[in-house]
Length: 82
Image 1 (cartoon, helix red, strand yellow):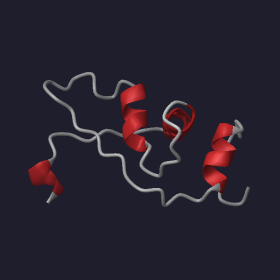
Image 2 (spheres, rainbow, N blue to C red; image 1 turned 180 degrees about the horizontal axis):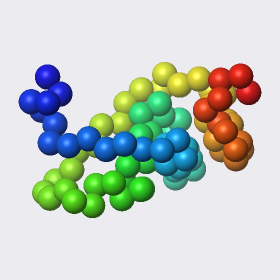
Image 3 (tube, helix red, strand yellow; image 1 turned 60 degrees about the vertical axis):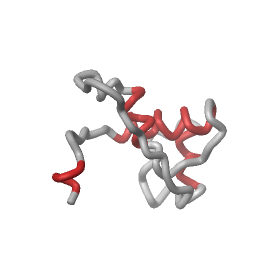
Image 4 (cartoon, rainbow, N blue to C red; image 1 turned 90 degrees about the vertical axis):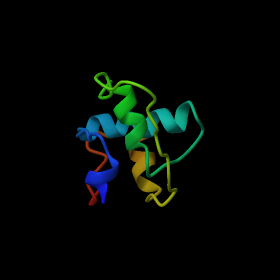
């Protein structure tokens, strides 16, 4: 289904995802599981796209410890045993 509906997909590093989570929290006042779309825009991963770009921001189904670790600058916020 995705192949039929999507033009492209991008890969993000964990640090880029962390930047998306921080931006959503600090600038938009949202705690988002779906901060990867914001992260892709911040990392300019959409530079080759033409025309309108749609970004779906969804879910607040995030472990509250993860954004806390990201915002506090933990060097490895995605480790689950922290």
